[in-house]
Image (cartoon, rainbow, N blue to C red):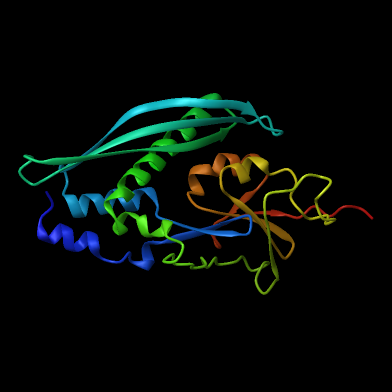
Length: 237
């Protein structure tokens, strides 16, 4: 089905420069971005030689968080078909993805959740074609554990950095006035809150697609450092 050149490219090791990383709790996760895997498919299979169909897109939950934002989760099932150059042969794969939309309005929450679910399903389906689509990232013995470097604002530079995992229950939580207890909506999106100097910052993947949820939690964008930040509230003694 695939020609010699395609087979050769599909067998290459994944270029580490394409790999992004984020932390969730104390775990480092490696991933490829959605636009990256789609562009890779265009290059390897050829424009017009592959396509996808959304065979199922359903809402699985809806609630409101403590900030009165709508939190809507979607599940998507994607069917991807890859054709040979003559379109005489094809191979079909299918997988499922999930996405969460968090926004002040129902429309924006639905849009965010549905888009994220479809993108996740496309990425998961394409990975069945091999390393160039991130399949090797699921093999922990071959993962590229690379830490992303973030340029810090001037007021944050040369300051110790502390990372917080998803808050524990109140009974288990260590005593620290700066631990973010009200950012469950951001943790649910796979984002992480970190303390740097006198500020909290938000890090994670697809961060611009989640900007409405981040702004709803009081964070502001610093254009120079490319970071979402929020001054730590100092409690009176």
